[in-house]
Figure 1 (cartoon, rainbow, N blue to C red):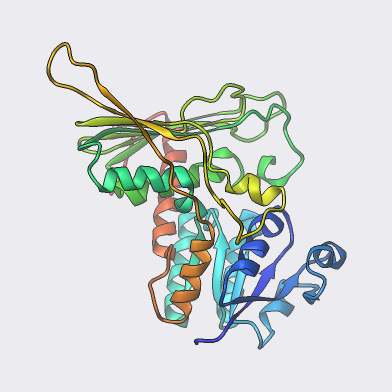
Figure 2 (figure 1 turned 90 degrees about the vertical axis):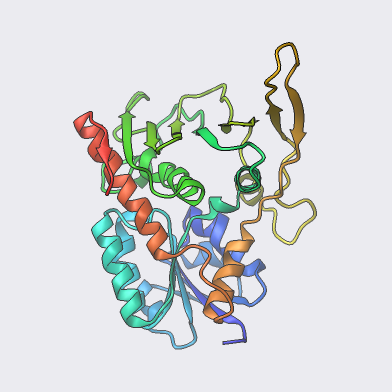
Length: 349
């Protein structure tokens, strides 16, 4: 398949409007053919020439669609992905993959049997700060990593009326933000030996977890993943200590805010973060001060995900995020829940 890959989008909520539709539209080789939504006016206000189907099933039945993108509430992922695969479509589904590891495993098996590509939108592999951290670790600039800390802190004191904050499978900050941080950790370090997790509901009226603190145990390294919603003065986004140097970076990747305000790719300075991190190179001789170096933050590039999906469908490259990699995230999410419920460290096989 060397022509334009024809895309159908299920739903037109925040994730579709802010992320998927603009990224699909901006990517050469992808074409947004139709959207399934109960609110055609909302879709056509942004995309006046795109047809709107009333149900996902009508979208799946269209012969002019190659790829289905599913950015819907977590609890709907399993059934919608399964139906799309059964209809012979390639599928991209938003993170987290599903609400249980067993559902994720079944979808991996179904995609394999159907000979269709299935990928999960773990877009934060292409955050500016994460790309920078990954480059520093891969280049051994920090030496052997002994401590890795990743925070996703926000100040959102009011509990919103939305499905992510209502008691249901897959709701809460651990599944929402923890899935991002777990995926990034797996990319850098692989599967840990064990995990411990603390969850809490800290805001007035909170009905699902809005705070998490996870520790992933590796043989020579500890990985700390932390998220909170009552953090008015956030600390570092990344803190990484190695046998040679340390790296500290403040501030979140700017791409989400750019998409929220309507910026579109290609545009000048896309994904550029002016808040650069600091590299501190330790000195072993007494009396010599550590060397401090500002590390320019690499530009973020969410569009690279969809470029990778396009190339994988064409047979030119592997998927940028495989379903099997997303299944590992699901296993860690569930292991974390078992740890939080038992108050014990959970060993991973």
